Image (cartoon, rainbow, N blue to C red; front, side):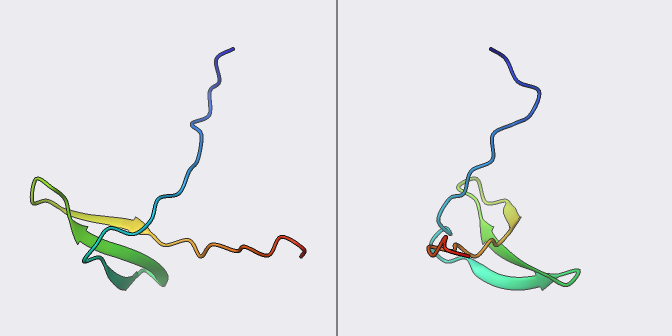
Length: 51
């Protein structure tokens, strides 16, 4: 069955990514394979799900 929401997923940070603060949020900044500068929010992974 189709859905109207896009599934969310996480990926590891690319090699050479720099952690920066943009508008008060932590983001990773790196250059793509085509040379463009990319920026994405950094989400800390919690392995302990007991909370």
